[in-house]
Amino acid sequence: DADVTQTPRNRITKTGKRIMLECSQTKGHDRMYWYRQDPGLGLRLIYYSFDVKDINKGEISDGYSVSRQAQAKFSLSLESAIPNQTALYFCATRETGSGTEAFFGQGTRLTVV
Amino acid sequence: GDSVTQMEGPVTLSEEAFLTINCTYTATGYPSLFWYVQYPGEGLQLLLKATKADDKGSNKGFEATYRKETTSFHLEKGSVQVSDSAVYFCALSSGGYQKVTFGTGTKLQVIP
Image (cartoon, rainbow over all chains, first blue to last red; front, top):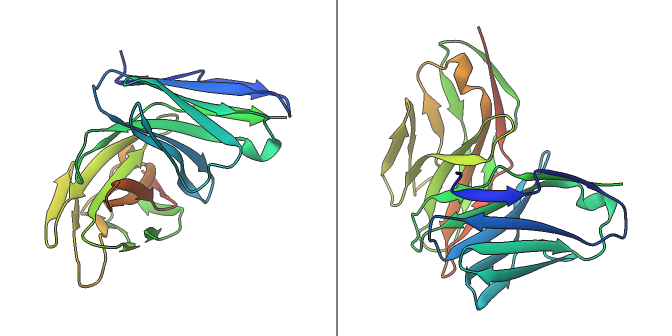
């Protein structure tokens, strides 16, 4: 099994619908992150969490919300999806420390029509 | 805030050519620096890292040296292979929360 698992892998949804992307990890790390990837823009941080009670906005949090249900689970929600939220979404996890490696899921390709 | 600037791609090289992908950064304090690689259809995976000035990270023939004086962390490989074709991301981690900031990525295509 993968260390970081994202579901679904692909999703097409309509404008205005609520959608949840799920992430679970088996690394035992406290830190979890949600990024979106767009061509030419790299990865941009949406939200990050350092433990179940510590959730922080990233650089592009508008239109998104998150829930840290447990140390191993971190979900991203789009309350009312819009077409410019069409992107590739990645969940990542890291051990505490400045030089630690981030482990990424395989991504969720979301299309909002 | 923190930022990472890397050369735009795509970069197309012939097999066995020398590779350089430039990366410069802006950060407060003393960041840790990373190169991640993304193969088609996959998530990112760590290629190499350096956590303090003058450190050299290396892996799979790739190298990068943490240059504090020029705020750079350029990726190099002496002889690329077709299997190196991927997107390469420079990244840094700094600050109390140790957020990871990524560059925009550089697509490398190696042709036989």
